[in-house]
Length: 378
Image (tube, rainbow, N blue to C red; front, top):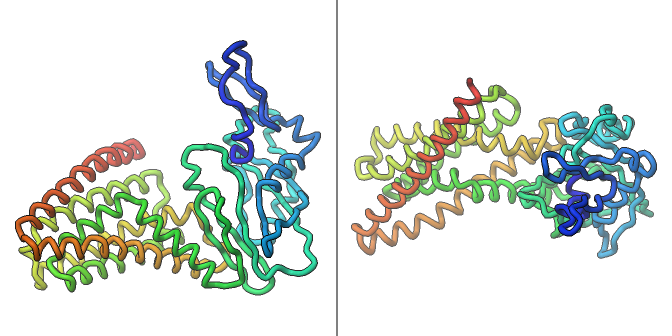
């Protein structure tokens, strides 16, 4: 609900009168310990529930051949976050709208930020759409809004396609019947995740610097790929503990894996293609298992196990992770190789400096995440 209304609310008290500002539609303002807070106005919803849906309809741009389609709001449902009905199929979505449109605890105060809105918008068409573009003009100015997870399920006749987009969708996303188009959205999400995940970047950085030759780099990368591919799927499908301590345990392990790989990069002259390198291959497989669990946590936030074409989306996301990993390697390996050819002493200094910096950052993460782990256990 905050996404719909945050930009329509005035911030702070009136500087001249000290009075509360005019509230956004369907909300009430109040002071809580001197802070301005926003509650759902149930009276407005009862008198004109579709008005909230009309705000969404005006912001959502559904275009076919460059023409915006007009939609009719058919239903609006409000839920306290955590109590909303989950749905991954068209039938489940239709069943969700059969329930009452106000939360069961509507007699109590409900923060706008704690409220989820489901809206059913019908677009009357003369014929089925072959493809269309979907975008939004919403810009609520909320923190981390650029990381908003958007999941679009297209139920046109034939095979259902699942599309993924990150952010506020101000740039239109093309929705088509193409499986390749749908996979590309999850491929892009996998690439974005590893390139925006500093811990994964530092691990691959140390992995790359630690290989004495390109064959050894490919050998180690293969081990990492095997490991994270297994646990990404296993973790996503629920074959992992669900206790509160498990996520911080994995995150702490990922931080420690960076320190380990940094140490390996400093001792690479001792690791030829021998038993020691085979040991490192097994080690990268094990560390890949750890990182794969981290990837699965992210995938859980954007996809449900019973979503249509689940294996297609899962495979595309995993390929995106691989592509992101390759991009990091392609950016680092040529520079490291040229530095080695130019002056070996400089390459050693760079490697030690980078490994030291990565270890320092990872050590801070280990302390921070370790504290979260201990707090979760006790």
